[in-house]
Length: 114
Image (cartoon, rainbow, N blue to C red):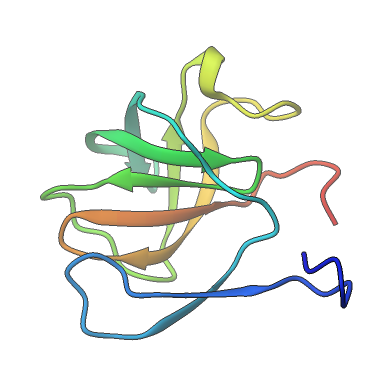
């Protein structure tokens, strides 16, 4: 959030291996975090991958050959040490951006965040 204006700042980014420009809105800086996690679509395991970074609102993952589409709903099974306070694993997420190597997931099970 910009201290001068009181409005959150937009971060213009290009997802890995993507030709599209994308506008992401983040309230908080993500901290680097390397965890092995399992991902699910519609209750079915699609595979495991490593996280890149995380904050209380979302997570970046190295999705490798896993097939994700922007706007898709997935669940991520986080270890107890990686689950944000107030959430239980698995956490439901929205795929914000999906590239050939990395994906950005926004947590949908956020409690107490406006």
